[in-house]
Image (cartoon, rainbow, N blue to C red; front, side, top):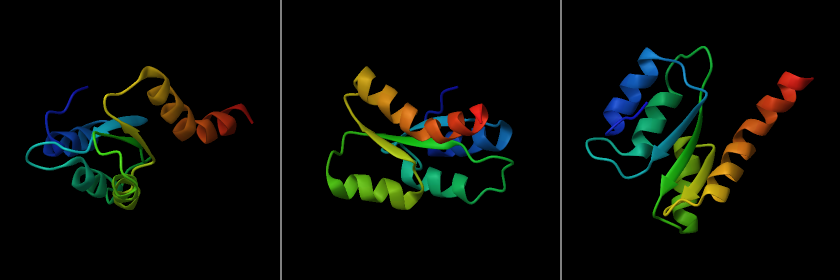
Length: 100
């Protein structure tokens, strides 16, 4: 599913359960940080893992993403190995629990 802005991302999570969201930090109408905060405050059966995708590569950008409730962080331009690593990091505990 694709959301063109943060408002659409929040609305999508209200309609459907997601395991993983790749959240662009800089979006129109509502940025990814605020969208993540709103998702984290929702009463959901299961909270999705959220990976920030941003051109900001500074430690402050990473910290802001974590403070908003994002689980991991990938810088743009996104490289396949970096994205795969982030997905593995955020899902590894879920995978281990499923196997146990």
